[in-house]
Length: 400
Image 1 (cartoon, rainbow, N blue to C red):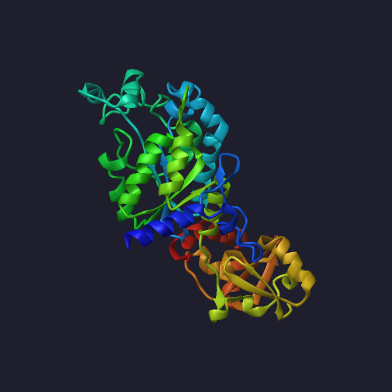
Image 2: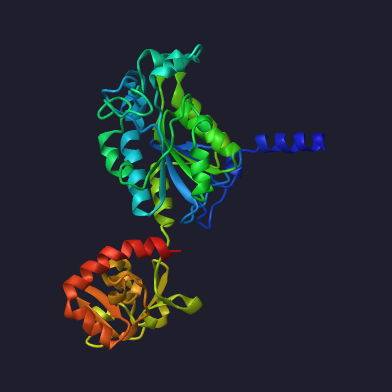
């Protein structure tokens, strides 16, 4: 058995890259091109090793950002002299913000694992190389665990541009890690309690805290995707921390993504909340959504002319209508996923009667019956304002 395994492994390593399938490029044609993986700002030839991938599904994943703090990411931070080149090269600051925004827009849970040192931490009897450096330069220093005095604007504080995302009352800021990994904080507990099984990881510093978090999360049974260009590391003569981390990201994590890839995957995992008919997922009872805007009387769509949007299949009377919808689906799709607009205004989901459909202010609204339609229209602007306010909460509660 050992001899067979050794032969198989040797054959794998000897296989030319061009003979391996391209990860993420399944176009139905050529599956023998050289595989690539994103490296900073472009593709890089990949190694002939497995790439399991991570499939994000609403509710089962979280974004984890490690050390999004001034001392790492601000030009005024004490570590900028060694990490600034990598941060700038990777676009790390901007890419982390894109991940925050995408996750918040998708209703995904966000965790932050910060790095703080208190006065008693400076009494440690021994440190590793960069631990000692961080202590010597006062990196991430705070007055104490029970005090936030002088935190605002300090090296331990968040970058200002991240504060709207972190301080929104929804982001989970776990207790600080003390060396590099999360073994000394409550990250794993908080992830488990939130029902998270997949973690999208970004932050600082690539070959220290990020890599250490990745290794521990893998050991704890999580699927981990690293967003490589949303990390960065120290560059010193003879030592490139990002390159060291990238090699280990690829060999250990379930996948390595660019920020563009991660944002797209997060958006795709937002989920849907749409009123459809049965297993066919037909929206608007099969009526052509564009015809509500262009015709005196809405038209039935053809099963042969269809388009998908936000979990629903819409049918169209003409190909021109389908193409118009595909070019701007948000313009033509019914408001509130096709649920009763008045119902949403009072924070409940109700079915609709297609005969109540109306286009007002360039939007398509439906209601459960004519009586409710009259109530909705009696205070149209107020009803819409209340419905718009309630819809995000209903979506978070009921989306699949």
